[in-house]
Amino acid sequence: MTNPAERLVDLLDLEQIEVNIFRGRSPEESLQRVFGGQVAGQALVAAGRTTDGERPVHSLHAYFLRPGIPGVPIVYQVERVRDGRSFTTRRVTAIQHGRTIFNLTASFHRPEEGSIEHQLPPRLEFPDPETLPTVATEIREHLGALPEALERMERRQPFDIRYVDRLRWTAEEIKGAEPRSAVWMRAVGPLGDDPLVHTCALTYASDMTLLDAVRIPVEPLWGPRGFDMASLDHAMWFHRPFRADEWFLYDQESPVSTGGRGLARGRIYDRDGGLLVSVVQEGLFRPYTPTPAARD
Image (cartoon, rainbow, N blue to C red):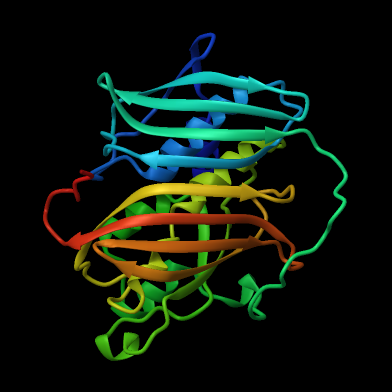
């Protein structure tokens, strides 16, 4: 299996080991911790697998409690909190080595006609994704070649990511920059036709670039890192159906960063400007050390 999109679908295909218990793979990678988007995506798969499949998820709220260990399977225990006439609620606990590393509550809603329909338009008009370079192209242009570690990451990356604004590389370039970032994203290959897979794949992607907005006024996104970063919590509201293997725009901003924590908000749009998903996340930022930032 060489296509990163196929690997993502496989990663989200959990093994059911009991009625409400699932096991997810955690690839052995040269990372200090399991990627948070992976745990969130897998937990949402576990929640969705215990519903009737007729109600799409409309919101999730999650906390990252401990760093996950790469290469160690993650067990997901699902609590069936509620099965109502219109809404279904599930609570999921992710466990490694007998310790809770993550928990998530997800709500599913039976589709119905809306009595009120409106949305704010995107804040700006953005260039089409086809006109923008990939991250790897920008790095190659700046450095002359892609470092080996980034070459490996590019081969594994399940999403094509294209920054709307050119990457900044120097202190002079980031001077006065607003805490905002926007990227076009889509899976690098087809993800099939299961709506739950697309929802969970986008959940995976939503954790990839959101905290960029916090860092933009402080340091280049792809230069040497001065901070340890760790996702603390994550919330998403799903407004409209979508496919994660089609282009979507992720518009991100950070309204505040203080006390070692930065808040980021994201709005995900389709190419026609329809608001698909709203996202909020808080992250921990500490001066860089060789060990992961602790979550106390």
